[in-house]
Image 1 (cartoon, one colour):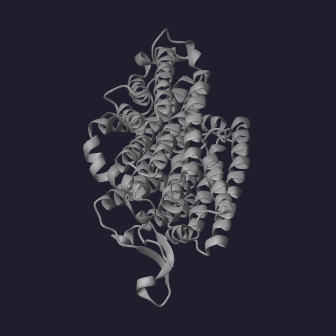
Image 2: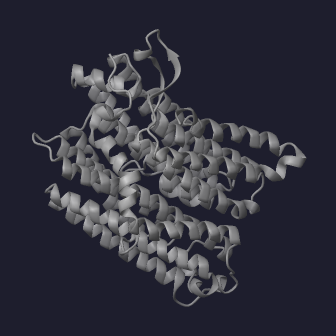
Length: 510
Protein backbone atom coordinates (compact mmCIF):
# COMPACT_ATOMS: atom_id res chain seq x y z
CA UNK A 1 0.00 0.00 0.00
CA UNK A 2 2.89 2.36 0.66
CA UNK A 3 3.69 2.57 -3.05
CA UNK A 4 0.31 4.08 -3.93
CA UNK A 5 0.31 6.83 -1.29
CA UNK A 6 2.34 9.35 -3.34
CA UNK A 7 -0.18 8.88 -6.18
CA UNK A 8 -2.61 11.09 -4.26
CA UNK A 9 -0.30 13.99 -5.08
CA UNK A 10 1.22 12.87 -8.36
CA UNK A 11 -2.00 11.77 -10.04
CA UNK A 12 -3.98 15.05 -9.88
CA UNK A 13 -0.88 17.14 -10.60
CA UNK A 14 -0.02 15.02 -13.62
CA UNK A 15 -3.60 14.93 -14.92
CA UNK A 16 -3.81 18.72 -14.53
CA UNK A 17 -1.09 19.12 -17.16
CA UNK A 18 -2.65 16.37 -19.25
CA UNK A 19 -5.95 18.28 -19.27
CA UNK A 20 -4.16 21.35 -20.66
CA UNK A 21 -2.63 19.25 -23.43
CA UNK A 22 -5.97 17.55 -24.19
CA UNK A 23 -7.70 20.94 -24.44
CA UNK A 24 -5.48 21.82 -27.38
CA UNK A 25 -6.28 18.60 -29.26
CA UNK A 26 -9.74 18.83 -30.81
CA UNK A 27 -10.70 15.13 -30.56
CA UNK A 28 -9.77 15.06 -26.83
CA UNK A 29 -11.08 18.44 -25.71
CA UNK A 30 -14.53 17.13 -24.78
CA UNK A 31 -13.00 14.44 -22.55
CA UNK A 32 -11.18 16.78 -20.14
CA UNK A 33 -14.05 16.85 -17.65
CA UNK A 34 -14.34 13.06 -17.60
CA UNK A 35 -10.59 12.63 -17.13
CA UNK A 36 -10.56 15.15 -14.26
CA UNK A 37 -13.46 13.38 -12.49
CA UNK A 38 -11.81 9.97 -12.92
CA UNK A 39 -8.54 11.28 -11.46
CA UNK A 40 -10.26 12.61 -8.33
CA UNK A 41 -12.42 9.47 -8.07
CA UNK A 42 -9.28 7.31 -8.12
CA UNK A 43 -7.72 9.53 -5.46
CA UNK A 44 -10.82 9.12 -3.29
CA UNK A 45 -10.67 5.34 -3.75
CA UNK A 46 -7.01 5.33 -2.70
CA UNK A 47 -7.84 7.40 0.40
CA UNK A 48 -10.60 4.94 1.37
CA UNK A 49 -8.34 1.93 0.75
CA UNK A 50 -5.69 3.37 3.07
CA UNK A 51 -8.09 3.63 6.03
CA UNK A 52 -7.71 0.01 7.03
CA UNK A 53 -4.10 -0.37 5.94
CA UNK A 54 -1.03 -0.40 8.17
CA UNK A 55 1.30 1.75 6.07
CA UNK A 56 5.02 1.64 6.96
CA UNK A 57 7.32 4.65 6.92
CA UNK A 58 7.59 6.15 3.46
CA UNK A 59 10.61 8.10 2.23
CA UNK A 60 11.13 9.60 -1.20
CA UNK A 61 14.83 9.71 -1.98
CA UNK A 62 16.43 7.22 0.39
CA UNK A 63 19.61 9.12 1.17
CA UNK A 64 22.10 7.71 3.63
CA UNK A 65 24.00 4.40 3.88
CA UNK A 66 22.22 2.93 6.91
CA UNK A 67 18.72 1.58 6.05
CA UNK A 68 17.69 1.85 9.69
CA UNK A 69 18.46 5.57 9.68
CA UNK A 70 17.46 6.43 6.13
CA UNK A 71 16.94 10.11 5.43
CA UNK A 72 14.75 11.52 2.70
CA UNK A 73 11.51 13.35 2.11
CA UNK A 74 8.98 11.65 4.36
CA UNK A 75 5.41 11.04 3.26
CA UNK A 76 3.08 10.83 6.24
CA UNK A 77 0.26 8.31 6.22
CA UNK A 78 -1.01 8.27 9.80
CA UNK A 79 -4.59 8.44 11.03
CA UNK A 80 -4.83 12.23 10.76
CA UNK A 81 -3.50 12.23 7.21
CA UNK A 82 -5.94 9.49 6.19
CA UNK A 83 -8.92 11.40 7.61
CA UNK A 84 -7.92 14.61 5.85
CA UNK A 85 -7.27 12.78 2.56
CA UNK A 86 -10.74 11.23 2.61
CA UNK A 87 -12.32 14.60 3.39
CA UNK A 88 -10.39 16.53 0.74
CA UNK A 89 -10.98 14.08 -2.08
CA UNK A 90 -14.64 13.49 -1.21
CA UNK A 91 -15.44 17.22 -1.35
CA UNK A 92 -13.31 17.60 -4.49
CA UNK A 93 -15.18 14.78 -6.23
CA UNK A 94 -18.63 16.18 -5.42
CA UNK A 95 -17.57 19.73 -6.35
CA UNK A 96 -16.17 18.57 -9.68
CA UNK A 97 -19.40 16.70 -10.46
CA UNK A 98 -21.36 19.86 -9.67
CA UNK A 99 -19.01 21.90 -11.87
CA UNK A 100 -19.79 19.66 -14.85
CA UNK A 101 -23.07 21.53 -15.33
CA UNK A 102 -22.38 24.75 -13.43
CA UNK A 103 -19.25 25.78 -15.36
CA UNK A 104 -20.81 25.51 -18.83
CA UNK A 105 -21.54 29.24 -18.81
CA UNK A 106 -17.81 29.99 -18.47
CA UNK A 107 -15.21 29.92 -21.21
CA UNK A 108 -12.08 27.74 -21.06
CA UNK A 109 -13.59 25.22 -18.67
CA UNK A 110 -10.49 23.07 -19.23
CA UNK A 111 -8.46 25.77 -17.47
CA UNK A 112 -10.79 25.57 -14.48
CA UNK A 113 -10.36 21.79 -14.41
CA UNK A 114 -6.58 22.03 -14.56
CA UNK A 115 -6.42 24.60 -11.76
CA UNK A 116 -8.91 22.57 -9.72
CA UNK A 117 -6.73 19.46 -10.02
CA UNK A 118 -3.62 21.45 -9.07
CA UNK A 119 -5.37 22.73 -5.95
CA UNK A 120 -6.64 19.26 -5.02
CA UNK A 121 -3.24 17.62 -5.52
CA UNK A 122 -1.54 20.35 -3.50
CA UNK A 123 -3.98 19.95 -0.60
CA UNK A 124 -3.23 16.24 -0.60
CA UNK A 125 0.44 17.19 -0.54
CA UNK A 126 -0.11 19.43 2.49
CA UNK A 127 -1.55 16.60 4.58
CA UNK A 128 0.98 14.03 3.32
CA UNK A 129 4.06 16.23 3.84
CA UNK A 130 6.33 15.01 6.61
CA UNK A 131 8.74 17.93 6.49
CA UNK A 132 8.25 21.66 6.93
CA UNK A 133 9.63 22.82 3.60
CA UNK A 134 7.41 20.57 1.49
CA UNK A 135 4.48 21.58 3.66
CA UNK A 136 5.24 25.18 2.65
CA UNK A 137 5.66 24.25 -1.02
CA UNK A 138 2.29 22.51 -1.23
CA UNK A 139 0.63 25.33 0.68
CA UNK A 140 1.89 27.69 -2.02
CA UNK A 141 0.76 25.50 -4.92
CA UNK A 142 -2.74 25.27 -3.43
CA UNK A 143 -2.79 29.01 -2.76
CA UNK A 144 -1.65 30.01 -6.27
CA UNK A 145 -4.27 27.78 -7.87
CA UNK A 146 -6.97 29.18 -5.57
CA UNK A 147 -6.00 32.79 -6.42
CA UNK A 148 -6.63 32.07 -10.10
CA UNK A 149 -9.85 30.20 -9.40
CA UNK A 150 -11.30 33.02 -7.30
CA UNK A 151 -10.68 35.35 -10.27
CA UNK A 152 -12.01 32.86 -12.81
CA UNK A 153 -15.04 34.94 -13.80
CA UNK A 154 -12.72 37.87 -14.70
CA UNK A 155 -15.33 40.47 -13.66
CA UNK A 156 -14.27 43.45 -11.53
CA UNK A 157 -15.63 41.86 -8.33
CA UNK A 158 -13.74 38.61 -8.88
CA UNK A 159 -10.48 40.34 -9.82
CA UNK A 160 -10.60 42.67 -6.80
CA UNK A 161 -11.32 39.79 -4.42
CA UNK A 162 -8.56 37.67 -5.95
CA UNK A 163 -6.05 40.52 -5.69
CA UNK A 164 -6.85 41.06 -2.01
CA UNK A 165 -6.63 37.33 -1.41
CA UNK A 166 -3.27 37.26 -3.25
CA UNK A 167 -1.79 40.12 -1.22
CA UNK A 168 -2.87 38.78 2.17
CA UNK A 169 -2.05 35.21 1.21
CA UNK A 170 1.46 36.27 0.21
CA UNK A 171 1.94 37.95 3.58
CA UNK A 172 0.84 34.75 5.31
CA UNK A 173 3.21 32.70 3.15
CA UNK A 174 6.10 35.02 4.03
CA UNK A 175 5.48 34.46 7.73
CA UNK A 176 5.30 30.69 7.24
CA UNK A 177 8.58 30.67 5.33
CA UNK A 178 10.16 32.82 8.05
CA UNK A 179 9.06 30.32 10.68
CA UNK A 180 10.42 27.37 8.69
CA UNK A 181 13.73 29.18 8.17
CA UNK A 182 14.14 30.00 11.85
CA UNK A 183 13.35 26.42 12.88
CA UNK A 184 15.89 25.11 10.39
CA UNK A 185 18.54 27.48 11.69
CA UNK A 186 17.85 26.35 15.27
CA UNK A 187 17.52 22.60 14.74
CA UNK A 188 19.36 21.93 11.47
CA UNK A 189 16.38 19.78 10.44
CA UNK A 190 13.26 20.10 8.30
CA UNK A 191 11.64 16.74 9.00
CA UNK A 192 8.83 17.35 11.51
CA UNK A 193 9.71 14.47 13.82
CA UNK A 194 13.39 15.44 13.74
CA UNK A 195 12.53 19.06 14.53
CA UNK A 196 10.29 17.90 17.38
CA UNK A 197 13.12 15.82 18.83
CA UNK A 198 15.59 18.70 18.64
CA UNK A 199 13.11 21.15 20.21
CA UNK A 200 12.46 18.74 23.07
CA UNK A 201 16.21 18.61 23.71
CA UNK A 202 17.00 22.33 23.50
CA UNK A 203 13.80 23.63 25.09
CA UNK A 204 11.95 26.86 24.34
CA UNK A 205 13.92 29.98 23.52
CA UNK A 206 13.44 33.32 21.78
CA UNK A 207 14.17 31.87 18.33
CA UNK A 208 11.74 28.98 18.82
CA UNK A 209 9.02 31.35 20.05
CA UNK A 210 9.64 33.61 17.03
CA UNK A 211 9.29 30.63 14.70
CA UNK A 212 6.10 29.50 16.41
CA UNK A 213 4.61 33.00 16.27
CA UNK A 214 5.42 33.33 12.56
CA UNK A 215 4.02 29.91 11.71
CA UNK A 216 0.83 30.28 13.76
CA UNK A 217 0.25 33.80 12.42
CA UNK A 218 0.76 32.76 8.79
CA UNK A 219 -1.39 29.65 9.12
CA UNK A 220 -4.10 31.57 10.99
CA UNK A 221 -4.27 33.88 7.98
CA UNK A 222 -4.61 30.84 5.69
CA UNK A 223 -7.40 29.55 7.95
CA UNK A 224 -9.09 33.00 7.99
CA UNK A 225 -9.08 33.19 11.77
CA UNK A 226 -10.09 36.52 13.32
CA UNK A 227 -8.34 39.02 13.06
CA UNK A 228 -6.68 37.56 9.93
CA UNK A 229 -9.95 36.96 8.09
CA UNK A 230 -10.25 40.02 5.81
CA UNK A 231 -9.69 38.10 2.55
CA UNK A 232 -12.33 35.41 3.00
CA UNK A 233 -15.67 37.33 2.91
CA UNK A 234 -14.74 38.73 -0.52
CA UNK A 235 -13.05 35.64 -1.98
CA UNK A 236 -15.81 33.13 -1.26
CA UNK A 237 -18.74 35.08 -2.77
CA UNK A 238 -16.71 36.03 -5.84
CA UNK A 239 -15.49 32.53 -6.69
CA UNK A 240 -17.55 30.04 -8.72
CA UNK A 241 -19.71 27.90 -6.43
CA UNK A 242 -17.57 24.72 -6.71
CA UNK A 243 -14.52 26.75 -5.67
CA UNK A 244 -16.40 28.36 -2.79
CA UNK A 245 -17.23 24.83 -1.62
CA UNK A 246 -13.58 23.81 -1.87
CA UNK A 247 -12.27 26.97 -0.21
CA UNK A 248 -14.63 26.75 2.74
CA UNK A 249 -15.04 22.99 2.91
CA UNK A 250 -11.41 21.87 2.75
CA UNK A 251 -8.85 24.53 1.74
CA UNK A 252 -8.96 26.58 4.93
CA UNK A 253 -8.98 23.27 6.86
CA UNK A 254 -5.97 21.73 5.11
CA UNK A 255 -3.95 24.92 4.66
CA UNK A 256 -4.75 26.38 8.05
CA UNK A 257 -6.51 24.28 10.68
CA UNK A 258 -4.77 20.98 9.92
CA UNK A 259 -1.33 22.58 9.68
CA UNK A 260 -1.81 24.46 12.96
CA UNK A 261 -2.90 21.29 14.76
CA UNK A 262 -0.03 19.26 13.29
CA UNK A 263 2.59 21.80 14.33
CA UNK A 264 1.23 22.55 17.80
CA UNK A 265 0.66 18.95 18.86
CA UNK A 266 3.32 17.07 16.89
CA UNK A 267 6.20 19.53 16.51
CA UNK A 268 6.20 22.23 19.19
CA UNK A 269 4.20 20.25 21.72
CA UNK A 270 1.14 21.58 23.57
CA UNK A 271 2.02 24.29 26.10
CA UNK A 272 -0.13 26.79 28.02
CA UNK A 273 1.09 29.62 25.76
CA UNK A 274 0.16 27.89 22.50
CA UNK A 275 -3.12 26.72 24.01
CA UNK A 276 -4.02 30.29 24.99
CA UNK A 277 -3.34 31.52 21.46
CA UNK A 278 -5.58 28.87 19.94
CA UNK A 279 -8.34 29.53 22.48
CA UNK A 280 -8.31 33.28 21.77
CA UNK A 281 -8.27 32.74 18.00
CA UNK A 282 -11.07 30.18 18.20
CA UNK A 283 -13.34 32.13 20.53
CA UNK A 284 -12.89 35.41 18.62
CA UNK A 285 -13.57 33.70 15.29
CA UNK A 286 -16.69 31.99 16.62
CA UNK A 287 -18.26 35.13 18.02
CA UNK A 288 -17.23 37.72 15.43
CA UNK A 289 -17.90 35.39 12.50
CA UNK A 290 -21.40 34.68 13.77
CA UNK A 291 -22.19 38.36 14.45
CA UNK A 292 -20.92 39.44 11.03
CA UNK A 293 -22.90 36.69 9.31
CA UNK A 294 -26.12 37.76 11.00
CA UNK A 295 -25.84 41.18 9.36
CA UNK A 296 -25.45 39.90 5.79
CA UNK A 297 -28.14 39.88 3.09
CA UNK A 298 -25.86 38.41 0.41
CA UNK A 299 -26.27 34.63 0.76
CA UNK A 300 -22.67 33.73 -0.14
CA UNK A 301 -21.19 36.43 2.11
CA UNK A 302 -23.34 35.11 4.94
CA UNK A 303 -21.98 31.61 4.31
CA UNK A 304 -18.42 32.97 4.15
CA UNK A 305 -18.66 34.65 7.57
CA UNK A 306 -20.34 31.53 8.90
CA UNK A 307 -17.27 29.53 7.80
CA UNK A 308 -15.11 31.73 10.02
CA UNK A 309 -17.41 31.06 12.96
CA UNK A 310 -17.56 27.29 12.43
CA UNK A 311 -13.79 27.01 11.98
CA UNK A 312 -13.56 28.80 15.32
CA UNK A 313 -15.25 25.82 16.99
CA UNK A 314 -12.52 23.53 15.68
CA UNK A 315 -9.64 25.78 16.76
CA UNK A 316 -11.24 26.34 20.18
CA UNK A 317 -11.60 22.59 20.74
CA UNK A 318 -7.94 22.07 19.77
CA UNK A 319 -6.87 24.92 22.05
CA UNK A 320 -8.70 23.51 25.07
CA UNK A 321 -7.24 20.06 24.35
CA UNK A 322 -3.75 21.60 24.29
CA UNK A 323 -4.47 23.40 27.57
CA UNK A 324 -5.59 20.15 29.23
CA UNK A 325 -2.52 18.28 27.98
CA UNK A 326 -0.21 21.03 29.25
CA UNK A 327 -1.47 20.77 32.85
CA UNK A 328 0.69 19.26 35.56
CA UNK A 329 -1.68 16.28 35.68
CA UNK A 330 -3.20 16.13 32.19
CA UNK A 331 -6.54 14.39 31.74
CA UNK A 332 -6.03 12.57 28.46
CA UNK A 333 -9.65 11.43 28.31
CA UNK A 334 -10.92 15.02 28.36
CA UNK A 335 -8.27 16.17 25.90
CA UNK A 336 -9.18 13.27 23.63
CA UNK A 337 -12.86 14.23 23.79
CA UNK A 338 -12.06 17.81 22.77
CA UNK A 339 -9.85 16.61 19.91
CA UNK A 340 -12.51 14.14 18.79
CA UNK A 341 -15.15 16.88 18.79
CA UNK A 342 -12.91 19.26 16.84
CA UNK A 343 -12.03 16.65 14.21
CA UNK A 344 -15.66 15.53 13.92
CA UNK A 345 -16.74 19.13 13.39
CA UNK A 346 -14.01 19.57 10.77
CA UNK A 347 -15.41 16.57 8.89
CA UNK A 348 -19.01 17.74 9.32
CA UNK A 349 -18.26 21.31 8.31
CA UNK A 350 -16.65 20.07 5.10
CA UNK A 351 -19.96 18.33 4.29
CA UNK A 352 -22.61 20.87 5.26
CA UNK A 353 -20.74 24.00 4.23
CA UNK A 354 -19.86 22.50 0.84
CA UNK A 355 -23.54 21.59 0.50
CA UNK A 356 -24.67 25.12 1.34
CA UNK A 357 -22.21 26.78 -1.04
CA UNK A 358 -23.18 24.45 -3.88
CA UNK A 359 -26.85 25.06 -3.13
CA UNK A 360 -26.23 28.82 -3.19
CA UNK A 361 -24.56 28.36 -6.58
CA UNK A 362 -27.61 26.53 -7.91
CA UNK A 363 -29.90 29.24 -6.58
CA UNK A 364 -27.78 32.06 -7.98
CA UNK A 365 -27.60 30.41 -11.39
CA UNK A 366 -31.35 29.73 -11.60
CA UNK A 367 -32.66 32.85 -9.86
CA UNK A 368 -29.98 35.34 -10.90
CA UNK A 369 -29.33 36.89 -7.50
CA UNK A 370 -27.62 36.24 -4.16
CA UNK A 371 -29.72 38.75 -2.21
CA UNK A 372 -31.96 37.16 0.40
CA UNK A 373 -34.66 39.84 0.04
CA UNK A 374 -35.02 39.07 -3.68
CA UNK A 375 -35.69 35.36 -3.15
CA UNK A 376 -38.46 33.42 -1.45
CA UNK A 377 -40.69 30.47 -2.23
CA UNK A 378 -37.93 28.27 -3.63
CA UNK A 379 -39.49 25.19 -2.02
CA UNK A 380 -42.08 25.35 -4.79
CA UNK A 381 -39.77 26.22 -7.72
CA UNK A 382 -36.57 24.28 -6.90
CA UNK A 383 -37.71 21.39 -4.75
CA UNK A 384 -34.52 19.31 -4.75
CA UNK A 385 -32.23 22.30 -4.19
CA UNK A 386 -34.51 23.70 -1.49
CA UNK A 387 -34.68 20.38 0.36
CA UNK A 388 -30.90 19.95 0.27
CA UNK A 389 -30.35 23.56 1.34
CA UNK A 390 -32.72 23.03 4.27
CA UNK A 391 -30.84 19.94 5.43
CA UNK A 392 -27.54 21.81 5.19
CA UNK A 393 -28.96 24.72 7.20
CA UNK A 394 -30.32 22.40 9.89
CA UNK A 395 -26.98 20.58 10.05
CA UNK A 396 -24.83 23.67 10.49
CA UNK A 397 -27.34 25.08 13.00
CA UNK A 398 -26.83 21.99 15.18
CA UNK A 399 -30.36 20.61 15.00
CA UNK A 400 -30.63 16.88 15.89
CA UNK A 401 -30.29 14.29 14.44
CA UNK A 402 -28.01 15.86 11.81
CA UNK A 403 -24.22 15.67 11.97
CA UNK A 404 -23.58 19.22 13.18
CA UNK A 405 -25.57 18.58 16.36
CA UNK A 406 -23.35 15.72 17.47
CA UNK A 407 -20.02 17.44 16.82
CA UNK A 408 -21.11 20.64 18.57
CA UNK A 409 -22.48 18.62 21.49
CA UNK A 410 -19.20 16.74 21.87
CA UNK A 411 -17.24 20.01 21.80
CA UNK A 412 -19.53 21.52 24.47
CA UNK A 413 -19.15 18.41 26.65
CA UNK A 414 -15.38 18.54 26.23
CA UNK A 415 -15.25 22.21 27.24
CA UNK A 416 -17.43 21.56 30.28
CA UNK A 417 -15.37 18.54 31.38
CA UNK A 418 -12.21 20.65 30.97
CA UNK A 419 -13.84 23.14 33.39
CA UNK A 420 -13.84 25.84 30.73
CA UNK A 421 -17.36 26.94 31.65
CA UNK A 422 -17.13 30.43 30.16
CA UNK A 423 -15.95 29.06 26.84
CA UNK A 424 -18.68 26.43 26.97
CA UNK A 425 -21.29 29.18 27.46
CA UNK A 426 -19.83 31.21 24.58
CA UNK A 427 -19.89 28.17 22.28
CA UNK A 428 -23.51 27.44 23.23
CA UNK A 429 -24.51 31.08 22.63
CA UNK A 430 -22.85 31.04 19.20
CA UNK A 431 -24.77 27.85 18.40
CA UNK A 432 -28.02 29.62 19.23
CA UNK A 433 -26.99 32.61 17.11
CA UNK A 434 -26.15 30.27 14.22
CA UNK A 435 -29.59 28.67 14.52
CA UNK A 436 -31.30 32.08 14.35
CA UNK A 437 -29.14 33.05 11.37
CA UNK A 438 -30.16 30.01 9.35
CA UNK A 439 -33.80 30.35 10.36
CA UNK A 440 -33.61 33.70 8.59
CA UNK A 441 -32.02 32.05 5.55
CA UNK A 442 -34.87 29.56 5.35
CA UNK A 443 -37.43 32.31 5.87
CA UNK A 444 -36.16 34.51 3.05
CA UNK A 445 -34.80 31.89 0.63
CA UNK A 446 -37.06 28.87 0.92
CA UNK A 447 -40.33 30.16 2.36
CA UNK A 448 -42.35 33.35 2.03
CA UNK A 449 -43.77 34.93 -1.11
CA UNK A 450 -41.56 34.43 -4.19
CA UNK A 451 -39.91 37.44 -5.76
CA UNK A 452 -40.16 38.27 -9.44
CA UNK A 453 -36.91 36.45 -10.20
CA UNK A 454 -38.04 33.28 -8.39
CA UNK A 455 -41.25 33.09 -10.39
CA UNK A 456 -39.19 32.46 -13.53
CA UNK A 457 -36.77 29.99 -11.90
CA UNK A 458 -36.63 26.25 -12.49
CA UNK A 459 -34.77 23.35 -10.93
CA UNK A 460 -31.01 23.11 -11.43
CA UNK A 461 -29.55 20.56 -13.92
CA UNK A 462 -29.51 16.92 -12.85
CA UNK A 463 -25.75 16.72 -12.29
CA UNK A 464 -25.84 19.67 -9.90
CA UNK A 465 -28.79 18.13 -8.04
CA UNK A 466 -26.91 14.82 -7.78
CA UNK A 467 -23.98 16.55 -6.06
CA UNK A 468 -26.36 18.23 -3.61
CA UNK A 469 -28.14 14.97 -2.83
CA UNK A 470 -24.85 13.15 -2.13
CA UNK A 471 -23.79 15.78 0.41
CA UNK A 472 -27.27 15.79 1.94
CA UNK A 473 -27.01 12.04 2.53
CA UNK A 474 -23.64 12.59 4.21
CA UNK A 475 -25.13 15.24 6.53
CA UNK A 476 -27.91 12.83 7.55
CA UNK A 477 -25.76 9.71 7.80
CA UNK A 478 -22.67 11.13 9.52
CA UNK A 479 -24.51 11.85 12.76
CA UNK A 480 -26.09 8.39 12.81
CA UNK A 481 -22.82 6.66 11.92
CA UNK A 482 -20.76 8.27 14.67
CA UNK A 483 -19.60 4.91 16.09
CA UNK A 484 -18.06 3.50 12.87
CA UNK A 485 -16.64 6.95 12.08
CA UNK A 486 -14.97 6.98 15.48
CA UNK A 487 -13.50 3.52 15.00
CA UNK A 488 -12.19 3.85 11.48
CA UNK A 489 -11.72 7.56 10.75
CA UNK A 490 -11.89 9.97 13.68
CA UNK A 491 -10.39 7.83 16.45
CA UNK A 492 -7.05 7.19 14.69
CA UNK A 493 -6.86 10.88 13.73
CA UNK A 494 -7.48 11.93 17.33
CA UNK A 495 -4.79 9.57 18.59
CA UNK A 496 -2.19 11.19 16.32
CA UNK A 497 -2.72 14.54 18.05
CA UNK A 498 -3.28 13.07 21.51
CA UNK A 499 0.02 11.17 21.44
CA UNK A 500 1.87 14.44 20.68
CA UNK A 501 5.39 14.11 19.29
CA UNK A 502 5.31 10.31 19.32
CA UNK A 503 2.55 10.33 16.71
CA UNK A 504 4.69 11.10 13.66
CA UNK A 505 5.41 7.91 11.83
CA UNK A 506 9.19 8.00 11.97
CA UNK A 507 9.79 9.16 15.52
CA UNK A 508 12.47 11.62 16.54
CA UNK A 509 15.76 11.38 14.66
CA UNK A 510 19.14 12.57 15.91
